[in-house]
Length: 416
Image 1 (tube, rainbow, N blue to C red):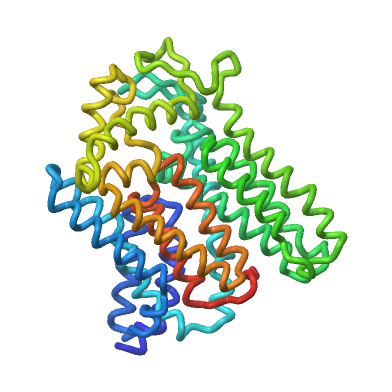
Image 2: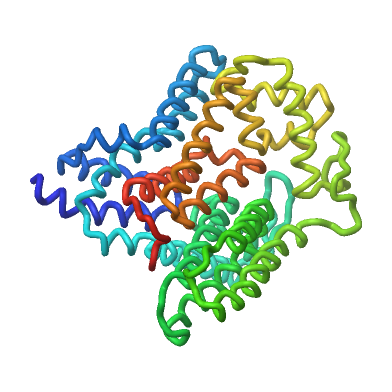
């Protein structure tokens, strides 16, 4: 049984990756299978965990969140949050089993993720096409009357059961993997045509998903990537090509921000009293308004916050007080991980989260792995516009790849 489970362990890893861009149930099945094969396969390696600084900071974050549940009024919601952040504990432990897998297999994992994301987006497009043929191009949500094109944003990703912002995050990381591969894979230009095709395809997907803040994070990462690209990795000709390609991808990605903004409105102006359909909300001013309302709640609940499960409940009271009916009706959270953590867990929670990011960034630089560095930066910037560190799907993604890079100790950027 032990040998069988050891052989199934790499299959379980691929199953987790394959189901990442799909619904949570499918991904949970993959994670459960991975845990089972690891337990029965005997892949224990405590010493590796002790040397994994991000893992230790992640454990501390879980402890702080667990303490936060104790003084939370909404114990049920607090427990759900602990369930969502369980990958902080699961993957640092389970992925110690990577030490027994062939290096050739490990080098293929980023490539497999790219194909999984590409396949999931293609499936979403096919479902959107079938919906259009049978029901028409536009769909009206019965709960709020919002009309949406079948091929954009949440309507597109609803077919495969994932949040548009989260799928955008996966697509953006896939783009970084492909660019990294184009740089490090020393093969003739003709042999890289598939990578170029995937790069174009996934860039278009970023635009139609219309998750502007994720695209903005990608653009920042691409800019940093192009600046710190080490000399000698590629020749002068390729370096000149990339000076054109990377800014172009960044610009196209930013289109997903621009197409969501009505040019007739003021990008940064907002009024809490605005309500559909006669409002001027966009991705930018809505977040500014949410941060404004969150700041007042944060100030009133320091130094330890309101508790792990009470963040949204407390925000509802402040939205109501400020006559912010749009946020109250939609039950919005802060749309900023750092503010939301400060609200729920106070100064200890925010300090622990920043410690986690700091140690992760330090480790990635120490390994000199550009892809690892970009992963940390992508999530760090994304946290300014959403709360991915307490959402199960994004936590699974981040913890898997962070500890994958951590345990494989690849000194050079990954190759596909």
